[in-house]
Image 1 (cartoon, helix red, strand yellow):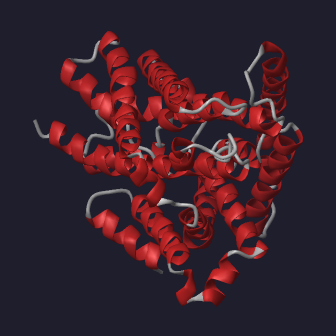
Image 2 (cartoon, rainbow, N blue to C red):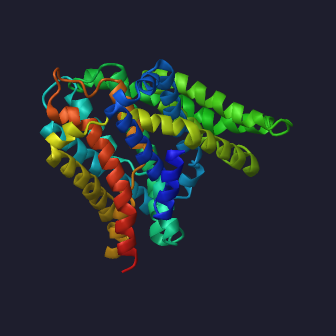
Length: 397
């Protein structure tokens, strides 16, 4: 109820509803953790295995929903400029985030994995956030709007590859020096995973979709989606990746070319209701349990630099390629800012890294490592709120 209220308030402020829901969930979790003595029974329930299981389901369904709202066939229609913007908008932030990690993080066996985590976290662009921003500005069909949405789609795919590499490194405990001996088996697993799942999604999913079109009971489509996503998630875990990789990829292959538009819309609505209405708020609340403002207060400069880096790296990484592709200086600036919006995916990555113990090394962890999780959460919220505000100011010029 609280998250929905904040979601509606965010929409009235011309921000994506997800921003309000995300902020509400995280701060509910933080308040519950901070004042646990006032409601011990609630705190006990929130720390139970059942709540943890529901939070994991929230992570799974969020990534599945993100995948469903993407259409892989849209990539074939993307212009070369969108691909160039996406590659620059992914490469520059990843490198800058990794470099920041190498500069400020203490030496440990996990330093390279922590630095790569920083790079991946600052590199992601949230497609729904970008869509909502340009829709509100009336610029969804403009040259800039089309370029940003197409580039954001490619960004998600590229970040999926980077995330798979990161999770593979964590899962196989090859988080040390990233030597060739450690890295090659991880790359091999990632490539094998995509070599199997992509052809299945492109060729097998449509055949299954056609075979079920003539069945009379509507629940079968929702059930088949969950079965396919679960199979992909199990396979991802088997390959020492993470279930969210499988969920996201399975969602991508559920689109109107596989099932009829009416079926797609109905299932997407069911998924959205279950995820945003129940499971996602639980996941956001679980993140709030680990939000530590005292650790952030100890290194405020790091949080400011990280947030500034997240905005500046997208501005440079996406804006300059846009200018090279023939956009004007103003349009290139709009592209760079438009690619800066973040969403739930960064927080899911942070949650996975938290579960894997990435913020517990070295022992004892330094103050920067202790603040890493909270800093990423704050960065994601600030950039998502700031992006539409900056974009509106520039759009009106």
